[in-house]
Amino acid sequence: MSRPPQPSQMRLDRLLANMGYGSRKEIQGLAKAGRIVLDGAPVTDADKRIPVTPDLSQRMTVQGRPLDPPPGFALMLHKPVGVTCSHKEAGALVYDLLPGRWRMRDPAISTVGRLDKDTSGLLLMTDDGALLHRIISPKSHIDKRYRVSLDRPMSGDEGALFASGGLLLESDDKPLLPAKLEVLSPNEALLTISEGRYHQVRRMFAAVGNHVTALQRDRIGGLDLPDDLEPGGFRLMTTDNRTALFAAA
Ligand code: URA
Image (cartoon, rainbow, N blue to C red; front, side, top):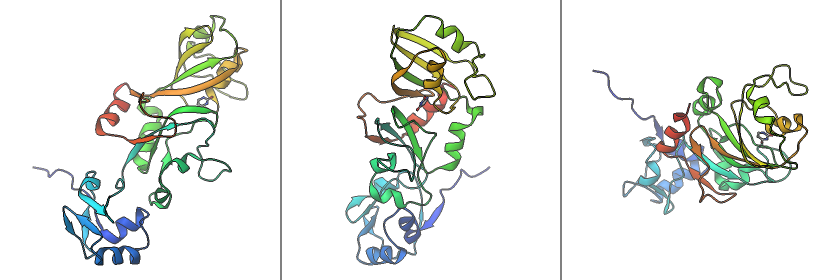
């Protein structure tokens, strides 16, 4: 009979140093001072190997506070307008919305794809490269839905054109895959796309002579932007969230 997969084990000093809590020497000092507590008991030897399980934040405290999410986590962020999905551009970055220590993490946290600076809505972030690739892989068929506000009323022909699979955007060499348009009012629609080309939604509406005045991503796969997640806020993804993300594919 095969054994269930075992959690990876890591030395405590290495784990916490990789999570941005300080140098390994600093972690050794914290441990000696009894400031790292696992399952109610101080871990005074930072050489100790710890099984890195997803529930570690519920079982370990560092300096009296619950441990940050251990490696292999993902989060949903409500990206506000005006922040950039980049590690190093000038101005406000999505990484500034996370606790400062998280910038020091190894593996680093990345955005799963990008939203334009002027686009708001659901943005996933993770330090799990395999998960990131699984989400963005075309093989996973994870669609993205956008709520679009437009400068001018729609003509009524947009839905058929977007669904046709024949729309070739300027400077692209391949037509877009079919996309689904749901009209909410003359100037508002939901658009579901399966690709992630540069400024895709804005360019689709520009191709039909319109102009996007506001754009919000409200769904990725079967995962909705939570109603109670304020712009700038984030929440760790639960197992149910992950299931929902892939469920609609
Ligand atoms: N399409 C756009 O035009 N912008 C985004 O941020 C996402 C999709």
